[in-house]
Length: 130
Image 1 (tube, rainbow, N blue to C red):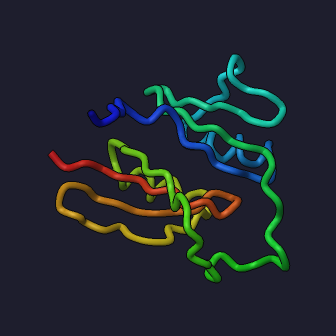
Image 2: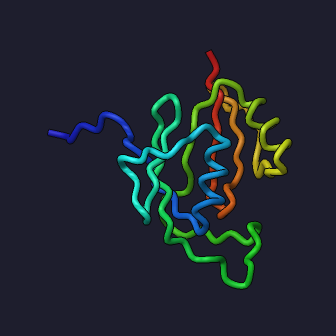
Image 3: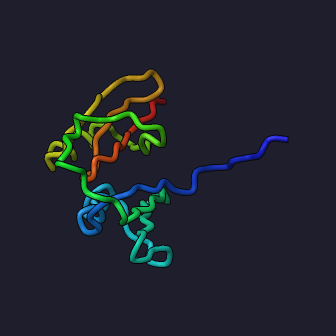
């Protein structure tokens, strides 16, 4: 009998700078949930209940490795979020100087774009089509 998975509880994202990361994700509508946060991890939650764990043990990139010099290590590649309007994400990123690294793409059932947080973690944003 297969195990049943009902939903994703949260996505953990390793970061290097607590204040910078909380500010960045705050701009995306996430706020700390103090009951589930410590000095080492901030559990942040959106108004719609999406949860992320910002893990404050990231190390700086050696020799200022450029984001373009990506090595494809095994493991999780990105967190993907559903948004009401992809254009709002694009406008938000442009206003703040955040580079859209890929997209927008029309994948049939969704419109998608990708960007990176201040530590280079890949974030995907999807506008679902009706």
